[in-house]
Length: 167
Image 1 (spheres, rainbow, N blue to C red):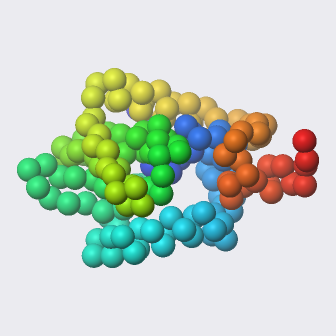
Image 2: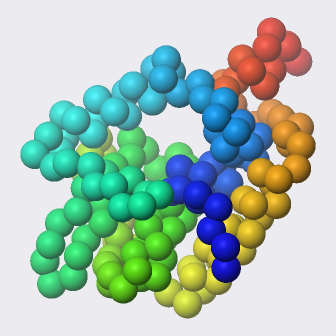
Image 3: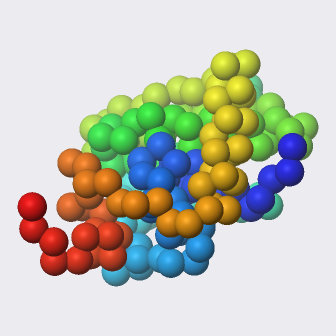
């Protein structure tokens, strides 16, 4: 299958919001000034200061540990978008497996002092391939119409999608 610069962030955005995915994929980025993104960056730097981000091709992993099996870690503030977080880590495991690297994934929630282990299953591989096809389909078409959700008000793209709209 042809991979069009799919990243873990794009996988996560696919599960969060197709409009956000499309905007981000078309280099319309609003995250730099967003306080929630800054909070996440601060949490990563303060909780795991001894670990460096690892870049492999199109993916950027928060950090990696070596044990019995390579551990791919992703740091998140909360479980509010857990499915997107899980699939982001699954994509990293899928990406690495296709390059001959067996690993397991761990989502770290330092504020909650919790972690979630992720293993790449056959079902996750199929779901990842489906998501990749859908991402290509979404990104090759026009911008999807924004659909207001509970999480929109905290999104960096909120003003772009809804401007001053009041319901």
